[in-house]
Image (cartoon, rainbow, N blue to C red; front, side):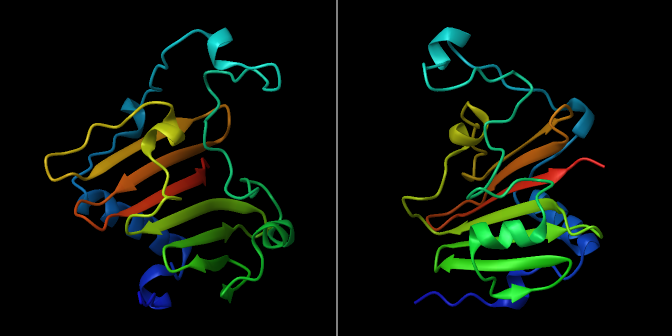
Length: 180
């Protein structure tokens, strides 16, 4: 049985969250230049990507814009209603454990609005999303099998990142964070 220690997964402060994110980037060998990030193009026409029940998606809108109904800018109380009772709760962040392989952290600003969501998947399981579902295209794996991509969506007001460690039991972290 996999034991999840809260002190390894919980970011204790927003500053630490950024430091931890940077560490994940370094560990996976990622080199991020926010000014150099560009949106990946998608194959097919807009008509081919749109069905009768879907609204057409603008190119500057991310595919991954929420987690279990929680969005950037949502009030803390509303986020907790969507995700349930957090394992660890504070005015600045909540930590949720859904099962042995999936957890999430939701960060709040001083007005109690969600400014970041980080979702972690441990090991291989069927609910672990692939990069294509996050960005609309695959990410090329590094020689060791790890992956990283970050895309800024200025019109949406946030960025989205996908990080996958190498190995047979990878950790996938997907983060959405408001651009300040």
